Image (cartoon, rainbow, N blue to C red; front, top):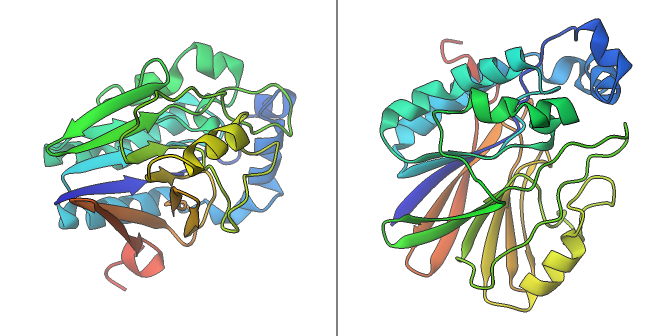
Length: 265
């Protein structure tokens, strides 16, 4: 059996954001951090991330996948802080993979400067959109789905191209479907998400592990089963342990919420 720890959406933020964040694409994110729903929700994201790291180390997985959104506004300080929070996982001596989220490539400048790639240089990453990895008897696929966007309301991912022969277990930042089994809404999902879903739902069984949507859920849509890890930086602070035992793929969901983040209380 192969066990893979999957965590996503840490969202380390520099609060309050630098004033320049209110003058470009970061405006929507900066407003969300100062007056919006994330004003208080992610102030403890580093503490929750540290608690999740302790839980993962205790589980001793065979591999680790971080699903992106390490930062809130793709600031170098945020990305470096997230890498520091997750750094103890590298000491486990198992393969550690990092996928960028849309908040890690929040602006075209951050994307061009490869800030996420620099901050997570000690992690294995994905080039050219897709990477197939062999973990003992188990093959997994890592899909790079994030890109910078220009408009304040645009959180869409990339147009992705998947190979013909896919492994049965895939990891990406973006989800293919919502908890109701429908594709994500237009401005929040993959640019070609419905087309990808249409192809996969009629093919061989695939389990798609994602972040981006900030709560953990599992849903079946044709031949596609979606495992959402949720957001490890949110108050729910969830992550998932994906277990592959022959043809069987299952998961356990853990919470690094308040009790785990404050083990002495």
